Image 1 (tube, rainbow, N blue to C red):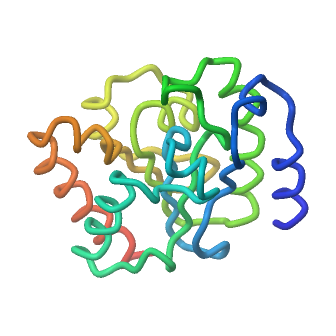
Image 2: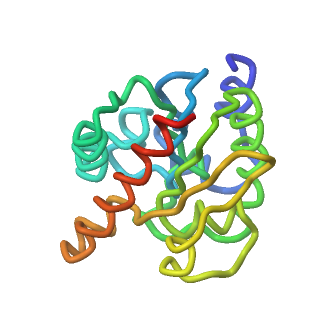
Length: 180
């Protein structure tokens, strides 16, 4: 894992390295049964070099606490390891350049359940063009690993009406996690 982190820190495959403060490798338990994958680091994450430390991260932590899971028991990462300027949606080229790093992380961690937070993570791992509603209605497999898709916490912060749905999804996560 340390070697992969060094490779990511020296990455120049796309232009995002020019504007980053830090790469955001991911954090938590590198042997976790449960992995959460978001889209890309935001401003706070870029400054601190850690994923989900801003407002979306605080919401994610509250959701985990509500289902009895500690943040340090899970792996939390993103598809992209560098922040896109102005928190824009990553380009398909940027995703394609970072995806091998995510694949390598998941191969090393070997989670039993992956939770995709938002469309970018879901489409990257599952290679299916669904709406978030369609993703949420189904369970998926990624190289034999169960995958559940829910809203990104940042989307819930922008639209509080989504909170009941993400809470439902976290109850499903709790059940699946206890069965894994």
